[in-house]
Length: 408
Image 1 (cartoon, helix red, strand yellow):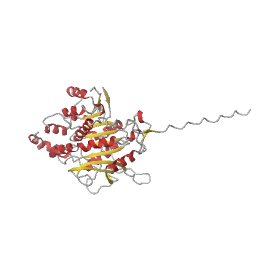
Image 2 (spheres, rainbow, N blue to C red; image 1 turned 180 degrees about the vertical axis):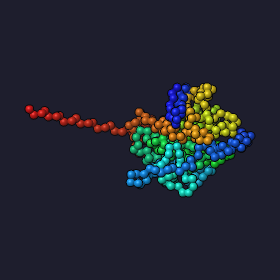
Image 3 (cartoon, helix red, strand yellow; image 1 turned 90 degrees about the vertical axis):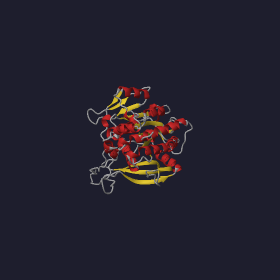
Image 4 (cartoon, rainbow, N blue to C red; image 1 turned 60 degrees about the vertical axis):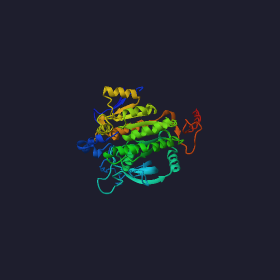
């Protein structure tokens, strides 16, 4: 067993469990009343954007404020609306290239937004640019963003959010993960109509089901980009179920590893029935999968009740012998975030600064096999297993001229 300490205090640990070979819902409406409603309606089944304004103390010696950091990202949405931002299911997909700005005083783990009044890029996360794309534009723009990148910087990070997450929350959360995790590749958001209330849990599940084809198509589209490195995935809550369903669908269609491009699949607080998950990993290689779990995730406790008391993967407890035996049989990596869960529901622990840094280190890890490989715009190698062209070797260094003998 390998243990990795990341520490938010002396007793904080992120446990890395070794790879082993490895309805009628109306009857549960009472769960949503009284105490449960009071606890979960604000945090629901997903972490919320913090309503905190950062202190801006970062200035140059001249007194000029630092410029906000820019995070360009591709956005693929199954939401309705011209920009794909409505909380209803669309009859197609909306693709765009956007830029989110991160304030210079950003605190890791937070998404700084105004409590009231107008947003200010010096204090808050904002969206500074938007451009709609069609399919061919999307492919061309992505290839352009990858061109000239070397090694793991050719990777993309695909983020799939969970239940009760707004369009803005999804964009800002991806920007926060990219910034705090120091990800050097290209971020991509897949956003779906995730509802806006705990009472709409079933409606959100139906929207997630209807979005599977679009996500499966996006994964294939990404795997066909010739110069892409790895497709790294971070999915949260119900988005984990959606992600695994799309990957399973692609695997059945004959692309289980996305043309060799599939990287890490990090499932944070996965709201997935344990039996369903076993069926999913029968098609998707579990060696790619990491589970970020927490035994004190109250949101998943509610989800379990709504699902007829069926255990959720994200609530597995590696310290419990029975759960550990289940984990060992799955063949996946498991990170225990129980000590990192500081929010009310314990459902957003993956956004804690130390955890995001670990995620960034995991997905940004240098790969020896392509450390000297660069993306070349428009060139498709003959061998489909080779996704890029190697950098040319350094020119030979000329021998230094002989040193003359000193005069006698």
